[in-house]
Amino acid sequence: MLASVRIDKWLIASRFFKTRQIAVDAINAGRVCVNDERVKPAKTIKVGDQLLVRKPPYEWRIVVENIAEKRVAAKIAETYYRETEASVLARESLRKELKDLPPPVFPGRPTKRDRRVIDKFFAGQHQHDDAFD
Image 1 (cartoon, rainbow, N blue to C red):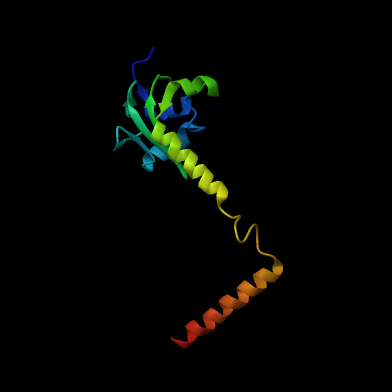
Image 2 (tube, rainbow, N blue to C red; image 1 turned 135 degrees about the horizontal axis):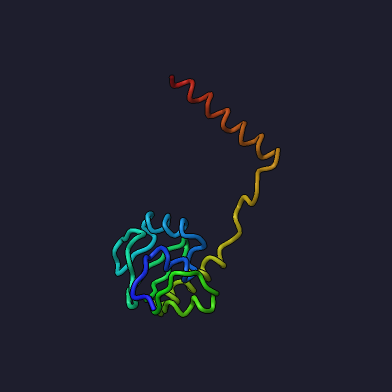
C-alpha cells in the first residue's frame, strides 16, 4: 500500500476530476488546498490530510482516508475520502438555492428581431461617442 501520492494523481483516482490535466489546471488556479495552503501539482498527500476542492459553484472539504494513484469505480473512490458535515450541509444548502432560482431571462441565442434591436441600440451609442471626439 502507498504511504503518499501526488495530489493531482489522487484527485483523478478519487474522481474529483476526469483527467490529470484538468486536475493540474485546478490546482494551479488555486482551487485545491491541502491543510489550508495552496499547493503545486507535485505535492504529496497522505492519509489524514484535509483538502479543500472547489469546482464552482460547489466546494468540498474532505479528509483523505485512503491513498491511490489509479482511477477506479465511483463506489470504490468514495472510500478514499470522508467529507466533513459542514461541507455536506453547505453543498446541500447551495444546491437548494440554485434550484429555487428563476430560469435565465434570455435563454438561448437572440432572435433575428432581437439582434436588430441590439444592433440599433449600439449604433446609437457610437453616434453619441463620435459627438464627443
